[in-house]
Length: 146
Length: 146
Image (tube, rainbow over all chains, first blue to last red; front, side, top):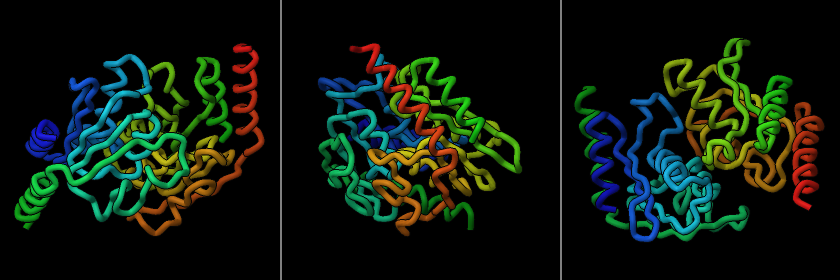
């Protein structure tokens, strides 16, 4: 999660909402990404989605069994869907997202019993730091605008 | 939807699950894609997601306001999430997906009142043809395997 936080900061330096994601297999980092939405002008370029695409490229296949995702913010519905499709084993996230979280906040995607792959998950890891970097980013943004 | 069906067939010819998507703005096609998951080895390369990314590139921004998506199969949770994130105006789909549909079948993503963008939607457009191309694809696949 420390690596994911570093990525989030790198995103913030580019004007991206600071969220970072790292995919790990056998204790090695397979892929890492921050949010790229603004730079790439791509609404799907969330850190998790970019990291999943990169991990698939690195591992040579779309099934990410045996992999774990670390992400600084609770995944949104799109990313929760991508996590199921990629068959990731587990998701560990930092801050909860009361407005957009699809793991425990607004939806319980992985506990619904509706889908054919339910990864393990655990939230709240370095939650204060993961939340703080977001708060700081939006505070600075508001100050610049006013 | 006829264009989306043609794309689905092109996908099938490449061994992709035949789903096609077209994004339209002011009655002009902005982007189009079929499923690319197997060829690209990318679990996120659903027709809708690829079309959304391409439309953002073509239009030069991640907000697809004023755009409509036509897709041959009811979107999954990931794609429904991407549709909300991209602010598409409306989604028109062909066949329902009882196993994985996140618009009307298994989830009612756009009617949940949980998210900050709820596109209009309408399903069942050329549903028989959109469903048939999928059935035919999986029938052929089973025959080849047995």
